[in-house]
Length: 254
Image (tube, rainbow, N blue to C red):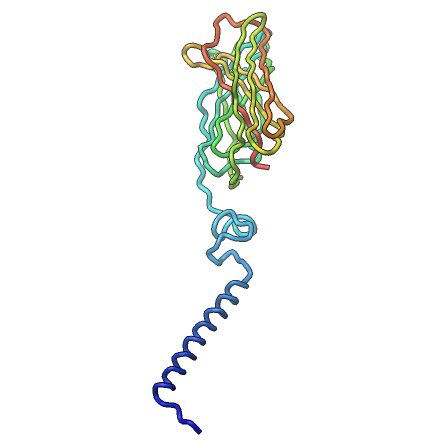
């Protein structure tokens, strides 16, 4: 029977050590890789919104920025005792929004007496600037001098990782006679149809103050297609608007 030399035994020992190490690595890979995801594995998996939080796990600790109100206006109409109110609002949060939130317009006269209250609800997309608008506010014999808009305390913030809808506004055209109208074309640049599109228009005077607001709704715009929109007001303006903006919205929280 042949006797292994010291050198041969050393080679065999080294070979077996390598085989064992490789087998151990494969075993650990299989065992760890086959473990069910948990809320404590330090990995963003399952339907978690963050690492080990949100979805099936405990809620993530969220410290979102407050919604910013850029301006609020009370706007007259051609009807006595009937007014409109509008606010330009911005959500500065990149990934947090709301499926619904409540807001309230309050109109005050020159003596700071409350003359009308109007409530509303809408959604809030991340990184969005949009218009809150309410029409047909009856104030009776009172004449409102200013408006304030309040947003109800918010706690139900949601993580929303969706791209902003690619809607392009072009070909704006304003006419004041025989009645004011602002027309434009909306282009849906995406590869899918857009539905339930809210659109608002704001006309500004020479001091960049909002002098008129209107809103409309489009049920859908097909993929890679355009749609025309027109906003109208009942009577010609005594001053011609110097600029305008059109704001489009599609609910990303659904």
